[in-house]
Image (cartoon, rainbow, N blue to C red; front, top):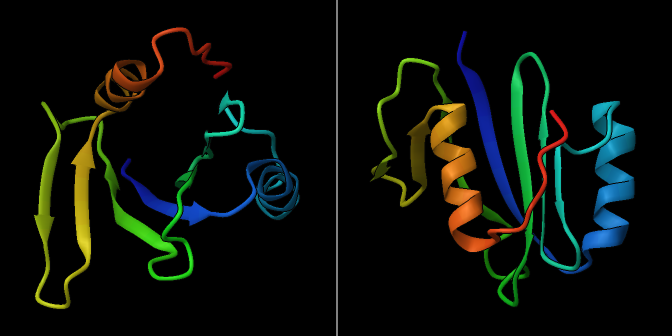
Length: 106
């Protein structure tokens, strides 16, 4: 089953982790202190990242986690929204490329 992916830009990681953990009903699978967090539920793949342009573009991108994906596919729709498609392994590889010491809890 595909999971819908939402990636948000946030201005405060710690406060955002508390807020979204309560809303989603679980703790993040990955936390990079002061930079990034990722939650995965049965239907949702949700990430937040600290960025300076949060006020300008709170939605970083949307997409699908698809177990059949063989790599990252990125495209922009007619509305300028960036969409990604990837597998869980692709996403883990991408995270590790930015933060090689991260530990996955899920």
